[in-house]
Length: 150
Image (cartoon, rainbow, N blue to C red):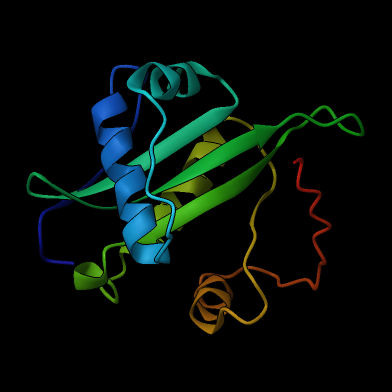
């Protein structure tokens, strides 16, 4: 990549950038729900040691990012990390930025002694499945059981 991209880990001071990342998720995932929690909630989440967020900037423009949760284990002394959302703005896709985010998560996990990270994707989301395959993930078939609370 010859363009000046930077990746930063967000801290509790970065709720404005986090809100911009959530807006990017809405755009990329074509979500109909476009609400964002108040900044105090975003700050609280960014202060949670079991939550991590990375953002990709091109110059001063936020063009991608990911959020993840560190999951403590009751079967091991090591945690695992779940990538909850990962997205790159459509104008910046296919430039290696998603792969750069995966490598950033890998480095984070190495530094935190987290031996495994994983991401979820819908089986029919071919671009996501192919992205994870191309970045070295071992794919598993899993069914999610979702219980909406009314």
